[in-house]
Each structure stands twice: as C-alpha cells, then as structure tokens.
Image 1 (spheres, rainbow, N blue to C red):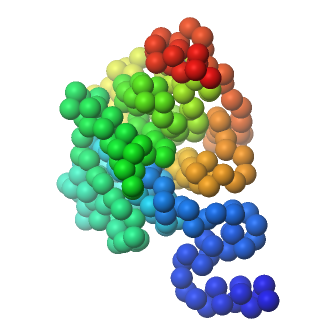
Image 2 (cartoon, rainbow, N blue to C red):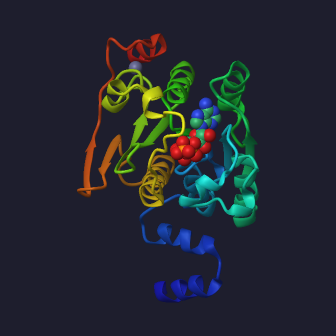
Length: 276
Ligand code: ATP
Ligand code: ZN
C-alpha cells in the first residue's frame, strides 16, 4: 500500500507530493500548514534571496521582503539574481523570480531602509498586521549585513514581543551563524553583541572602495540552515536551534544557547525578561 502511494506520488510530478511525503514518513505531522504562515525577511542579498527561494519552493503562505538596494553586477558571485536583473530593486527582482517559481505564495515587497523613520514605522506596522489573515507575522528573519539594521530589527522585536532569527556571514566569508531570538527567553542582539562587532569598527571594515569577501557557498549554507530552522520552528518538528556557529575552514559547528542579559541596554528586553 505504502509502495503504491509512493509511486503515485513520484508519477504525480507535483512538487507538493514530495513535500507531503514528509508527513507520510512521520517526520512532519502537519506539513500542509506551511501555506498558512507568514515570514518577514529583512535583507534580500546573498543569504536572504536564497532563503526566500527555499521558503517559496517549500510552499510558504506569504513572504514580506524588505531591502533598500538594487541588483548589481557585483552580486553575481552569489546565487539567485541574474545579470538581466541588474538595475532593478532587489525586492522587485526577487518578487518576479519567486512568483514565477510558485505563484501561490503571496508576496509583499518593500524597497525601503528599515532604519529610516518612515521605514521603521512601516516595518512595525507590517510586523503587527502583515499576516495572511491579518495580525502579527509568524517570524522575522534578519539577513542584513550591518549592525544598525540588526539593532533596528532587535528593538522592533523586543517592543512587539516578536520571535525572530538573526543570521550573519563574516567579512572573510569563512564563518557564519544563525540565532533564534525569543524576547525575554534567549539573549537578544543587544544582550550579547557578537565579539566581531564589538572589536571592529564597522566603518573601518567597510572602507570605501575596499571589497569584503563573499562566497556563494558560505551564503548558501547559511541560507539553508536558516530556512531549515524556520521550517522546524513553524511546523514544530525536530529541535529548533538557538545558536548555530559555522567555521568554514575547519568545517566546525558550534550549537548552544545564550540566556538574556539582566543588564541589557534595551528597556523592552528587560521588560520581556520580567514577564517570563
Ligand atoms: P556587499 O555589501 O558585500 O556588496 P550586499 O550589500 O548585497 O553585499 P549581503 O550581505 O549580500 O550584502 O546582503 C545584505 C542585504 O541587506 C543587502 O541586500 C542590503 O541592501 C540589505 N540591507 C542592509 N541594511 C538594510 C536596511 N537598513 N534596510 C533594508 N535593507 C538593508
Ligand atoms: Zn537584551
């Protein structure tokens, strides 16, 4: 019986039957719920674009994307964007490609800077009301490449008590991390700013005309971990990872959790800590 079902699924030629096989195999009990979830992604660059493609191919219900940048030829050493898209805003180019892959996904695209006054207010509004049936989105995913944008997402999520995941790839493309942040329960971005950010002045790292390294491999791996952790968190299977660190040179992984800091500088983080 099981074998007949499987061959029907394979013959079926339908990508959803492959995804639904996870249910039949007892790994994910509720895979069909994926189409009810809304995820808001900030940063559609080397990590964020691949992450959005993965979630689109997995059948996510709705994606809300933010990015202030345009596609450039310099982005072609990463995955996802093509030379024909140079000059388009990253979110507009991504929306076209993603709808072409899966027209069932609802997509909102904002070519905005989330650290500007209007950008931040709009982000807060979308976080609170952007879900498919209205109300708060299910998860925020940060795929930005700078401290100011991460701190902005952090303060928005602490204010709204919104769960989010942070991601980052180092300037030499040889290490990366993903982190699940549950306000008040795990360290927020302001509770424990990564050492690399504390020790390096960002202005110095991003000197005018000096090019940071980037590899499609490390960015693709990071996007894969972030997408996998998103599926686990939303669909409730396996163990959702709190903090996963990856060292590409040694192929070494670290997996741990950081507790909130009772001296965190974000008052909303302290408020959430007292609530828990
Ligand atoms: P590079 O800096 O190496 O040229 P990049 O700017 O494309 O590359 P990525 O690390 O690939 O950087 O992606 C990060 C993405 O986050 C970029 O597309 C960037 O435009 C976006 N981003 C960063 N800060 C903000 C912000 N404040 N508001 C909206 N999008 C942002
Ligand atoms: Zn904190």
